[in-house]
Image (tube, rainbow, N blue to C red; front, side):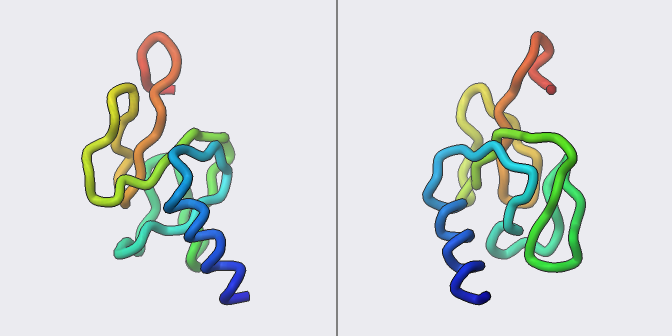
Length: 82
């Protein structure tokens, strides 16, 4: 189980963007980003697929918005919010 969690964290930290309903909590954070619900474990879940990427302590790229707790979400739609 621990190896599976480590593999998931490594995948999330090395992938530039992932559309996911479930994401691991970013290192150093105990809360979930905007749009995600805390599972009270090591993950956050959402009813909607968001394209997210870990920030690694840096600013979000152009076309992305900071959703907090160590993640950026790709802007979509005409208003760039959905």
